[in-house]
Image 1 (cartoon, rainbow, N blue to C red):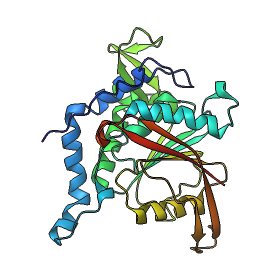
Image 2: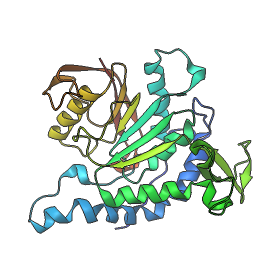
Image 3: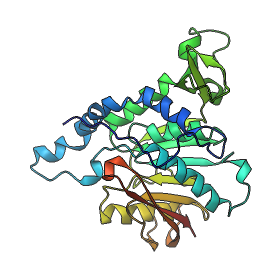
Length: 294
């Protein structure tokens, strides 16, 4: 059966992010990069890595290897709400300037690119994905955002630009957006983006520089959530905001020493808020949990 995402009608797409970028413009740009009618194909790509090794052994495929695409408009709201908690309700006009966003389990990179467009002031938007097939899709999507590919030839004297000047999300022309256009589209500047293929359980895949982390945890097991909590507890600095979907992180635990470069011992998170929103892939309703590393 073909997978076609349903539209979120509970959030006004004409709203602006805290960085003054219309949700709708980013949404339309992402639909250009990730056509809704191509979701089944993207889902099939994820199965080339995550499924067949289990199927060949006659084993049940772990649910956390199931690929899905979280509702973007609900994600927009969560980033803005997380900002309130990170800054304790202050500096609302500042946006996320100078901060780092990390999507753990970033899939094809859709939410990473979306975050970079919604808040171009992020100093970096990072995606960590364990499945190589959909990680490659993320790299190809980012390359499509490379303005140099569209405007310059190799060796052009102007080719060495700063990344956040040369990577843009092209959104179909929107009269509500005052921005230079290219080929009938508006260019939404992107914060610097970095995609990595690996597991959060590998201490070499560093997520500890995150100021805000997002995890689509809808299909994750209790064991994976425990491991995820420990990874954040070991690596992240106090004050880091962590958003998980449909499952709350365990709030405290203990991490053993791995090497001399990483801390060990007791850690603690606190649950700040639980937010219900609309998401087609969970049947119309999803619950997000916003935590802070203590």
